[in-house]
Image 1 (cartoon, rainbow, N blue to C red):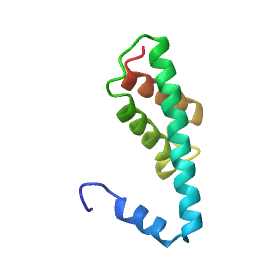
Image 2: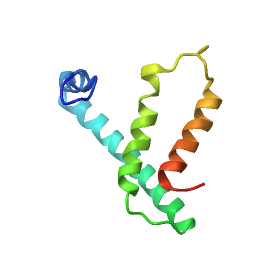
Image 3: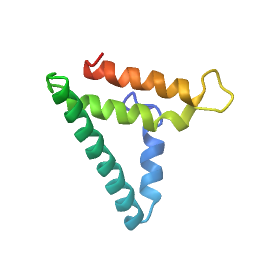
Image 4: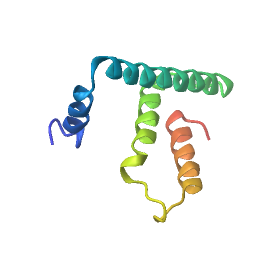
Length: 99
């Protein structure tokens, strides 16, 4: 484990193995999704009249939380997709200070 981030080296290695056009396409897609999430977060915080002090950090945490699901989720596991979606929505709203 390098830098305290399990799997970080493996993910970097996988991206480096991609040819440049595919790596650029994946990077663009990831960034575009993050921008969409950031816009939704900004709108939700504005609607709730809440501060945006840590909105970008919360957005990164939320997207990371969601993109990590395939690493551990299994059908037939202790929680189904609907329960996980409900839980994660609650986690995301909590990070943003929306109750």
